[in-house]
Length: 81
Image 1: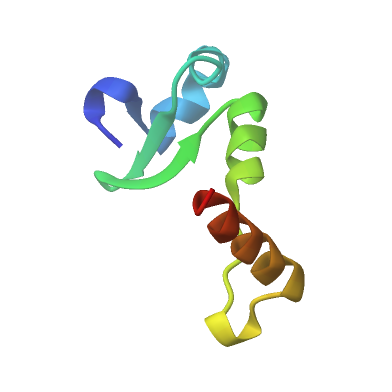
Image 2 (image 1 turned 180 degrees about the horizontal axis):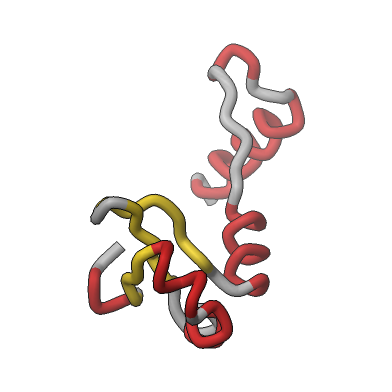
């Protein structure tokens, strides 16, 4: 995460000014530090939901579901046309 893309604050400052940082998190991530090291990130619900949608299931090639293989074969065949 680039520094220009987020706001950084300490855990203590977050507690004292939670409403302020909560408002900031609606538009950009707020990195929360503890002992000077990044520990958590406060983000909006919308951003959290967007990120959750991007989660992908990983599996070994040998375990690839048959419907995925069929889709890959169909797409490969369509490129020949």
